Structure formats: C-alpha cells, structure tokens
Image 1 (cartoon, helix red, strand yellow):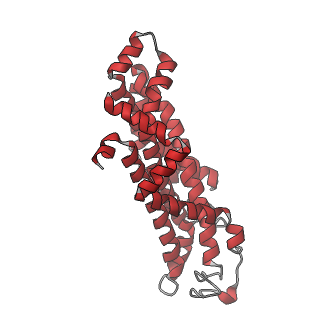
Image 2 (tube, helix red, strand yellow):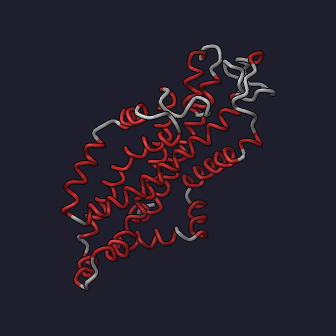
Image 3 (cartoon, one colour):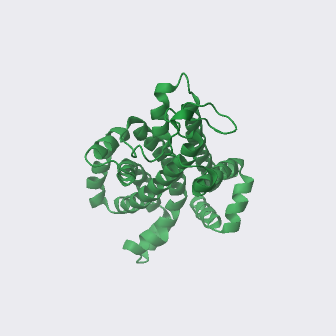
Length: 292
C-alpha cells in the first residue's frame, strides 16, 4: 500500500515542469539521453537550414570521402550523405514518437478493460496472444505488401505488433491493483465502473506505461530501419537511415561512410531512448529510488 502510494506521488511530482527538470539533472542517464534526443530533434526540425537537398544528384561527385565540402561524403549517385542522414532523423523520430503514443493509448484502453472485466479478458487476451505469436517484422511486411508503401502504412504496420505488449503490461498492473485494500474499500463505498478505473486504477498505470513507451519508441525506430533496409518501408525518395544503409551496402568496401554514419546515428538514437527509459524506471519505481 505504501509503495503504491509512493509511486503515485512520484508520478504526480514528475508531471510538474520543475520536478521534471530536477529529475533530469539528478539522473545522469536521463540527462544524457534527453540531451542527445534534443540535439537530434533540433537537427530534424531545422534540416532545411543546416543541410542541402537530400535528393540532389551530382554524378561527378559520386563516392567522395568525407571532407570540408562533403562532411559525411557522398553516395553512389553523388548525393550528400550528411543531408540524407539529417533528413533521415525526421523519419525515425516521427515513427518512434507516433508509434509510442498510439500504441500506448490503444494498449492502455484495452488493458484497462481486460484487467477490470473478466468476461472481456479471456477473448481479447487470446487475440493479443495470437498477434504476439507472429514476429513483428513479418507481420509488418505482410501488412505493407498488401498496400502501397508509405509512411502511414509503415506506422500502422509497426503499431499493431506493439499494442499487445502494452496491453499485457497494463492488464497485469490492473490485476495487481484490483486486489489492494483501498480498491476494495472504494468498491464497498459504491465506486464502480469508469469512475473506479479513472480515479483509482489509471493513475497507478502511468509510471510503468511511460517507461514501456520509451522502449516501444526505440523498438519502432529499429523496426522501421529494418523494413526500409529490406525495401518494405518508406519509399526510396524519402531519406531514411534504413534505406540509406540499404542503398550503400553494395559499395561498402569503397565507400564505408555511406553505411557507417547513418548506422551510427541509428545506434546512438536508440541508445539515447533506452537511457531515458532506464532513467525513468529508476525515478518512477519507488523500490529502485529507495535503493539508489
């Protein structure tokens, strides 16, 4: 009971802007991860100002190594790898954030209903188990091949496999909270249905949901890059770290920068998201907070 109350208090504190800033400064993993993500976000937002045209081809400048003129070199078509890498950050961040928000919202609603209603739980969770039994990459490829490739289709194809993970997390939290004495007291006092869910149960699912959303964000970025590498992601005319690596793999021996640089950006971005997730877990989990 005390641990749950402390978790709710921690979640309420972190909703305040000043408390969030203090938490970021005191936790080095959150600080480093947030700093890297902030730099990448600014880079993606101001891409037209700091980078050239990512689609401009200069055959005379093909496969140029990194230099003062071409910071990240050029690819086999003479396109600026720096410009393509900067614009590729837009796709990864849009996919990661959108999938995390959408999957969390959908999974939260379904998880709350399944954890609260036993009659719905059996049917819905079997459907969730069936979706989880299919590898996310294969499910995404199957959905994309049925329609025209595009960013919207990629988002839907990645969101669907991520929803069951959120549902299982929220459901497990709701099932454990339902057995707490204060929930039984609320039910005995006449609090039932939506009021019980939103007033007493929902606040206690926020902390684990936020942490899980960061891991979903990182997973979505990796899946999008994998799909683009396989040619089943965003169209080739949209720069993505995955299709940049895919297009440069045939020239790796003579132009390794066309693969290593976007691959390094993808790695650093996923690492930063995971650092933020680990830091939030340490901050929002009262048992880890007391241990630290």
